[in-house]
Length: 475
Image 1 (tube, one colour):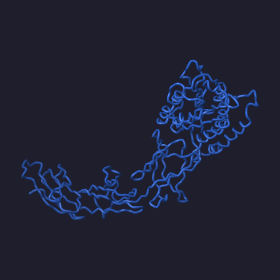
Image 2: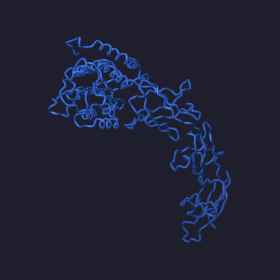
Image 3: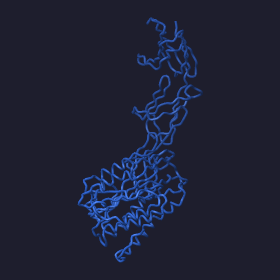
């Protein structure tokens, strides 16, 4: 059903031009909607737009050529007409201040008049036709109720477009409510369209969402066009991973885009250079502020990444990388061993890497711990741009310890006159073999059956690379 006008002259001719502008701005989205999903990189799938419409008493005032509610209603009707042709968009309508007269001071006067559904544009038009401005302006409470208006959906963008001519009248905090909706991942940052609002009110709405003030009737069409375009279109971007020459040559690394407010994972990409050797183009939601984690080792974190609608954004960060390899000569017992990499001077484990494999790291200085016997500690190892730093681990010798009975024993090295323990023997085995790094060692052992401290055995032995030897732990 369409809204009819008794006085056609009162309806400006430029209104037709407004509709044309809206349709032109939506043309790229209409084209995208007809493509396969995998080709629709420039538009969104499953966008849900909830219109929150002001039906309070103040909307009965005149604004330029007509009553405010008539102007707002007519523009919104034509937006609905345009959106109903898009298969990837669903709409709903919530109205506030339209059920109780202002004298009742009803601060819960808000209602979801039309729920989300496909092919429901006619229902929205029908409800808008009969909205009469009556009551108060409970903006915060209306926004709070929006949380229940969006049915569960794993891959939907939930957008709120609030159209109002006034500010909160019921003591609520629209900013706090909006922040909670965003932090819980229920909605994206809302759009607020002010109808003839005093410019001083801009600060009041800036914390709520994207505020657009249509100070004049002639501005309203442009504001709606901008809002709908931003709500439906993605924006192109690229991530430049810079080498030490500040060229975007680094690539083939995972990237995760999080929503700053909700912490939700929005995108996972493997960084790619296209066939021209340039970072490939991504399409991001301009309504979201991102936290970008680039999964290099160590990871690179970029907070508060935002893109501007309709403008290609370059996200650049230093990410020069080199390679690390730890290897041994010949066949050894270290084939499946993993060693620990830490950033130089830090205690936290950064990564585990297998022997004889090559790992990729940001250029810098690292400390390495290899769990051989004894442990090999290498500090301040430098990783350079596009260069492989190779660490050679000496081949161990195989030492077999022979005893008549299981017992308690440990291996030591002597440094500066002190014994430093490097390994414990298995107290449950009589005979046991261990891979030990080349060098001189001391073994201290006592049989488990012996009750005499003086039965402790101390022996010195030497290990050669690649050799096999036996140490007798009895007298």
